[in-house]
Image (cartoon, rainbow, N blue to C red):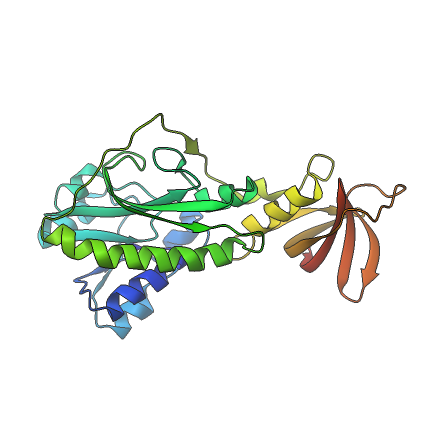
Length: 291
């Protein structure tokens, strides 16, 4: 198992509880995560220790160093699965696997639409209403392998990136449990991806700025819930001060404050702030001033 993201931990834990045996975990060290600027980093060392699984700290996050490739060649693993891994696997590593590697990716559409980075975050920002999870056989390209299983779930108006990761964990665990035995028995029927690919670009913390003059109240809501914890959060200037917003909700579209600018506080109720937006009012539930 190669993993470094918090969303993969419940999946891997579920597979362990179901009796899937892992020979090794591969997980970058915390200082490697900081250098690579990986949001949502998770260290699998405690889970490895809990289950008596040896842990390999790769020399490079890309797994392209001679030492990392030698590790995979030496062990000759049957199968590789991901516990959240934000890098492409090099061909030299994939060639050492007897059955191959299982990737998991999703977007609001079936692959090859929505390849690339941060598809859940983008789907929330775009106001999508479903998410299609797909297992595929990893090749050296970007999410371009043959698909071996697919399942979808709702993106409700009440979800945020955290709750979508809960759904991701449930669906990913169940797909792995029904696919791994078939793959090892040679009973999986993979299908090639059909259509013209589209790609999401990587999001950075700087992409989280709220444009009050451009976004309406529902767009701001989608923007905030796409970037809440474990990500760096959405931020914007409110009454001249920088705020980071973790939780908010559309408050009303009929109450108006025509003399208030967009991104200004129009009411306070205890710790709750009401902010004027295009097309309505936004209620801030969880926020902080940025130093």
